[in-house]
Image (tube, rainbow, N blue to C red; front, side, top):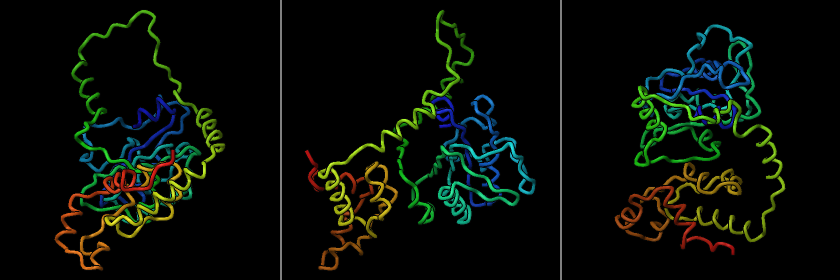
Length: 293
């Protein structure tokens, strides 16, 4: 991800490894310890390591200042913050992350830092039955994506391949084009796409289809607590990425048909193994609203 951010978009990035002992000062200094530089070659961030989620709880930047020392004016918030295991961090740290996302500012003991105009916050979670993000922080996350370990880890495989071939001799092909130091997608490109997106119109049929999807999701027997209004607003942009982290599967004893005498064992068998992705596929499939032509 840091390599993509710098090479493709020309953006700075910082990785924060969170744990139960992470303090507010730790979190603030980790995302602020980024040298402000217009090029990617001067970044002081570490490269990706071989571990995926089990690395020691240390912060990505090498020259992090102690919590009690004032920050230099030359430091700023990175364009992209990757918070690993944010769900394991104390509630106060999660709330600080939420405040950073909402206001684009972070307060320390000595200063107030503002996030850059192009700013993205990514929470990298281990999943499973462990701790969860706080309710409001989880709701504020725009999209989510689950990566199945069976799909492999191309970034780690690339590092492994590089280490195997480190002793090989690389011959430069005559006339080969050197790798450009300029980002592939510039700020002007993103700005132009944003302007074009504002001119997009949605037909009545498509809008009705979107509303029907929301209704089917809220009425699905496996969904507990309904669907939030914020998710409904985001539906116009992305469907399969905005609902997985917002859908909570109902307990069999609370499934709505139990009110009319359904058998608990039968409901338990019906809901066994059902996840958020299954609900979405069910609604978008034959059991959901008819798609417009």
